[in-house]
Length: 80
Image (cartoon, rainbow, N blue to C red; front, side, top):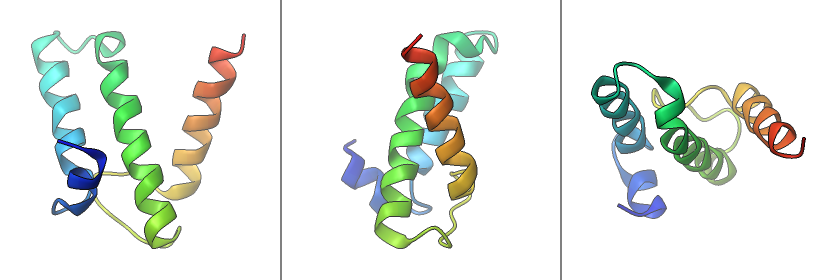
């Protein structure tokens, strides 16, 4: 699915959240093996908030301020 497909799903970004759960189950809950899927969810959630505003909600995404913190931590970790 594309980002646009995931944004249109009900609830938005849900397929990406489910992909994380499937990955964790298949990898004995080793989070490091599923980081790419976590980042894909963050990207979807970021697009969701950009489109709908920071007050929008979906069960698949953390609140906008927490999402931005997680994305900043990810960027900062990559710049080390």
